[in-house]
Image (cartoon, rainbow, N blue to C red; front, side, top):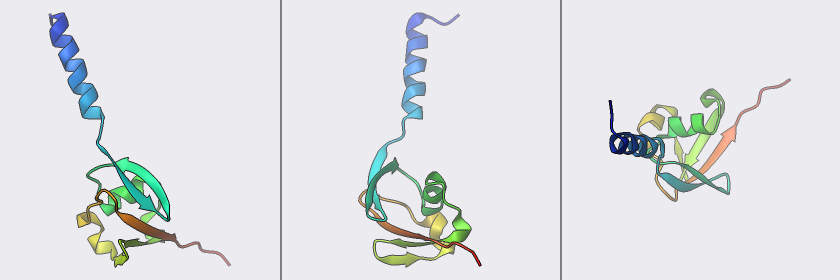
Length: 88
């Protein structure tokens, strides 16, 4: 049986693991707080965007799709994300 101190320590450690450092970035001119450590592909998922239908500019440079997994989002990053919409 675990003692009271052991349970409290485990609960605090679990809470700390659930908290992710937040960073501030700018997406399409609006300040946003997002979890730190995301790559560009992760960020698009976090924002709820369909990757097949967007183009991304990061700090005034277009980022090609093959680079999304290795492109880290850093504090202060400025992104412009354009969504393509089909229609007829």
